[in-house]
Length: 86
Image (tube, rainbow, N blue to C red; front, side, top):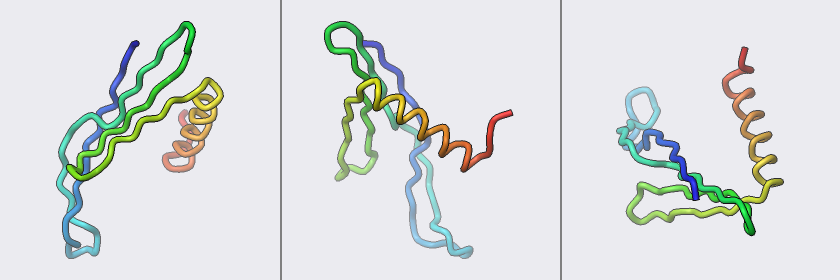
């Protein structure tokens, strides 16, 4: 099953700073692992990793329809947060 990882800095928050925002310390690690397969059971699997020792990892199995809905939603969120791509 092919696999890709999206690595993003994990931000750990501390107490509030002088500006009222939490002070953060950044560590890097795999955040989302994406696996997929074809054949009898075509699917896409997402595995999210928690860097909190007491936290939970989450596993999702997505059908083609779920993947398409997620892509549409992520594009909408990206465009609203950062503006449309040129």
